[in-house]
Length: 185
Image (cartoon, rainbow, N blue to C red; front, side, top):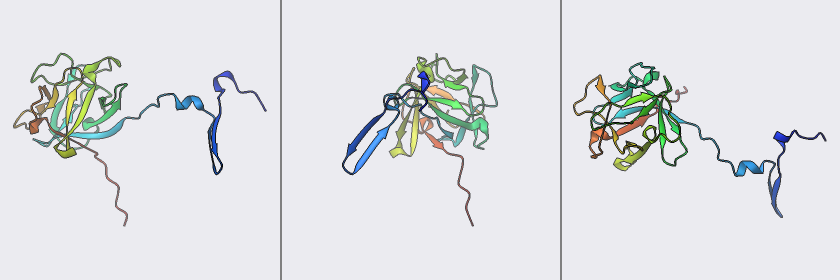
């Protein structure tokens, strides 16, 4: 049997009972955190207006997202990217790979899309909190505590803003998967 290179050496473990044997040749994998894949893509739809969070075809750091009527094109698709914090995600545009960013926001400020600042950038992490019995969500910035907000009586195009949470329907969002399984006939 040929010797394994140092980077490929593994320790084996086996647990056995008279009728069952369970084993692994990669004990180290039991102790390493597995990388989580992003969830989505989703359309992020305002409950109050039906408008979707949209990149407005922007691709540059610091540009502002807006709300537009839903059409499901790539610039309206968002991923919930994993972070090292339980219950917190990055909201990443599927079209331009920019993250929603709440840095320095005041009530009513437009939400920006920015390059990734790193794991310690709390203003780029979001909590997606179930509301209305789990039918919709509040999207809360981990760094500021502000939430994604759709201005009242918004029509396309409208700014996607951040606001102090108050529980209104304009701060409630549906994450909708834009894909369906084709019917077989």
